[in-house]
Image 1 (tube, protein in one colour):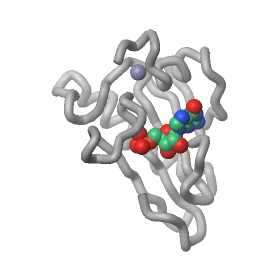
Image 2 (cartoon, protein in one colour; image 1 turned 60 degrees about the vertical axis):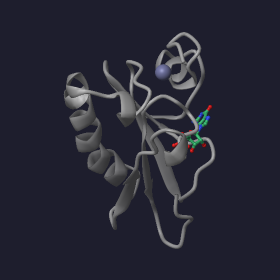
Image 3 (cartoon, helix red, strand yellow; image 1 turned 90 degrees about the horizontal axis):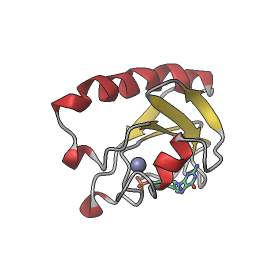
Length: 114
Ligand code: 5GP
Ligand code: ZN
């Protein structure tokens, strides 16, 4: 997958519209187009990484930033009572979009498990 054609790279560059939750120079958070919970958004690195399968020590900073952002953004989206992070990796991990992303899921239960 080249960064040129990658859906989430294109969202990160603003070429494909998204409902943004947060953005800075290295990460973007936006609402999932098919929410699996009352609150469901994704956090991506703007630089292309396929998944944790192909990540390395050079991604530690951005991965740490993404995880550290999650509680702040989740609370801003109303998840005061808890939330879940999910990262699907590779075909056997159920990953459908091959650009690393963290799902943040929350809101009143019950909702579908990923
Ligand atoms: P995965 O299965 O790869 O972990 O999750 C990919 C997620 O991306 C799915 O939950 C899917 O609904 C979401 N998604 C796919 N295409 C788009 C899109 O064009 N825009 C947004 N906002 N979400 C998308
Ligand atoms: Zn990409």
